[in-house]
Length: 347
Image 1 (cartoon, one colour):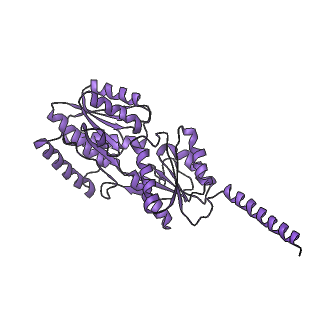
Image 2 (cartoon, rainbow, N blue to C red):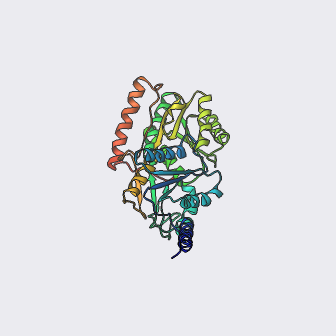
Image 3 (spheres, rainbow, N blue to C red):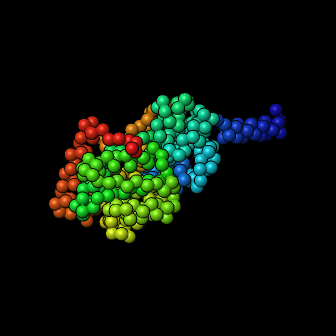
């Protein structure tokens, strides 16, 4: 065989390999790789929300550091970004793609059906249920990451009611973002805990219908404060920072959400910590180890420290602090034992 023919044969082989690589890159699943790659797609709340999305990004970065995996983080600025961003993560060879929230469920269901060989997870939605967004869908390649935030919110409702009563107040407030189940579950626990600890306590509830615009949450909080609320619980991601600023402006207590938001100031009574960072980390760890459980839900609660209380404000002092923390400790044990069943829906 001549050198010219040999060279032509090599070139043909190289071209065929290139074509095959292109097909794999555009195919229906992530390309096989010796290195595990995990992707996180934010919802519209953005990665700089100091709350829900930012905490999940911390989990992704922790996985990169501790598990030595490759990571992809893609921010969604509008809901129309969900499908392109999910698909982009797959095209980049991600072995596991995590959708950062409940609002992404419909688009995730569509994408997961188109890429049956890619593994997915979603924060704040259940996949193994006869109800909800995934009813009737093939969810073999989707795992739900769920959080019993009604439990720590119950404890916070009790705290808020007790400090309000001590100040001769009669109402506490909560500002939700968009009215969806992962938001309402906080409100349900908060109200139940408040009424458990202080009979007759009024719980004012409002929604901004937004997770980003702080002025909308601030307006809702101002209305609740004008109606007598002495504590404002913000359950609205970045938008919720506006509600907390309203509480601070009036010299009232604020309650943070998702992350420990005590960094905002001593006016933060505590925070309803939701360990979405650990949820993301665990999902990546298990998938990398071959322990991925598609079609099922991982549940995070008080018992396994998947939900918790943030730091208690140093401004809560003396006898009242002792009484509040003692009551919370008792209720926590009763929730974990099952003696107290905390509601998950708003009445």
